[in-house]
Length: 474
Image (tube, rainbow, N blue to C red; front, side, top):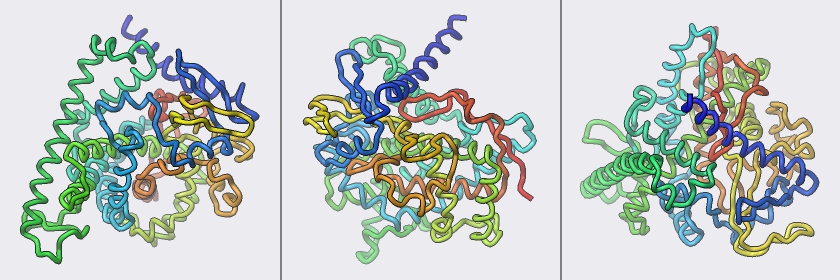
């Protein structure tokens, strides 16, 4: 009985956090998009208007993350998500080439192959008339995609959801979220005396040991290959021979290692930090987006039919072959659906920055040392920007409806110099997975999205999952 009560309390506290933030903005910040709160002795300013957000996110001097991100550092170190500005600037410059359009296009076959595994898992639910929770399935699919593209090796999460790596990844996320929500768990001298800390360290051991081993083995492999390659074949990003028997695609890890061999200065530790950051920054966020869009399309059959028609026309009715980059780029309405999903349910609902200098917003001065908490969830539902802000309406992102919109009114991948480096990767992955699913299945929502309870922490999640049903398309 005690265990059940404790579980309910934890969920309630997590849910109330986002509720309180949104309620504060509705009550105190509706007119100018600013309100002030204190978290103990630490001042926060909540911001949810595009014009108030722009002076912060557009300023290259204001890229320091708040102290809230420190709880991720034992896992991610100084990866792009958590690093101070002095480390972030050179890292970002070194990593940008890894997200070049040509490299992303080379990952299409990975997206498609893992999407087919996802289809097999969905197929098992065809006779489930009561519906099933799509969130864990989408999460495992996204994890498989990211491990293979980031590290060059799959953890086979979809077929082995109980693997040690998958368990550790899931558990450490819960521990970090729990610590963020419970103020008394934040001081290290208290946290280190809890069972949560012991579990935290066990998870870190598993995750870092796995990443370290992969970095070490891939580096040795690439050094050996480089020694055997002709000078004309060096430094290209085309598939290279693997043991002389098959072609193997370079993963982000390989690209980072090759860069370090060419003298860009990233150590093995720095490479591991970035690979771990890619995994946490990409798989959870993409999994949430995939889950939400399937629920929303299942709730609006007429919109789903428009997506069907677009995909069928572009693919010539072929429901099996892998789409090309050109075909994916032509899926404009599907992209509108993805963007509208991220408007209503931004994967990252809050962005926190520490202001190292005073910032002037209209007639207000936000003093240096303040934490600026950008409420993306509320920003995206501003009725002065989106006339019917709570409605799922992909037409919001048709070109004619975007003209004149404030550039900071829609920021699912943040904005400014410290925006998400992987946003093109994410959209490409979501297009591939969703188009693969919709060529085979029709989605039907089991519950109204208005009844879904939200958990607002690192990633915006449904409290009790998202239930859908599927049927085979005729």
